[in-house]
Image (cartoon, rainbow, N blue to C red; front, side):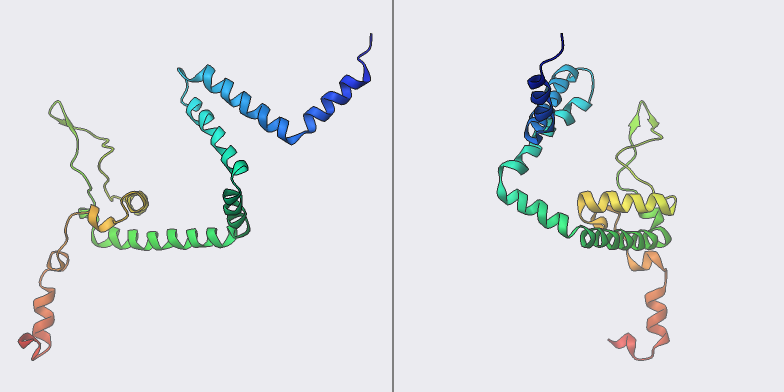
Length: 173
């Protein structure tokens, strides 16, 4: 024999039902994460996939998703402006403070200074300076608190004295 017609209708209805497909996807990711949990780091991301169900459960989160979805172009433009501003600040840091952009001391193991240190960052190129500014600015929130203290006279030696001498009467202030 042939397959009865109601079996075909059953499978067609089942495979086109969105809620069933969502539950099947949850079951598949749970099974895959259990199978991979000792051997692959992907299993941790698969375990977190179930947290997306929170958007189906709570109406307030659905409103948040709708607000982000309708204003996505404005949010992307704001992020673009933020990255442009970070690039401008990193260019200023690269030009004026490149030698001060060392955030942590280098790691020393067995008496040798390590070439690659995850705790430090040097501002050797404008691109690295931009990446350091984005990384430290987003993680620490204050790029100025991460770099060494810089005095104005360290930047331009003699600037304050020369400006006072060039304007008569300013030295009395």
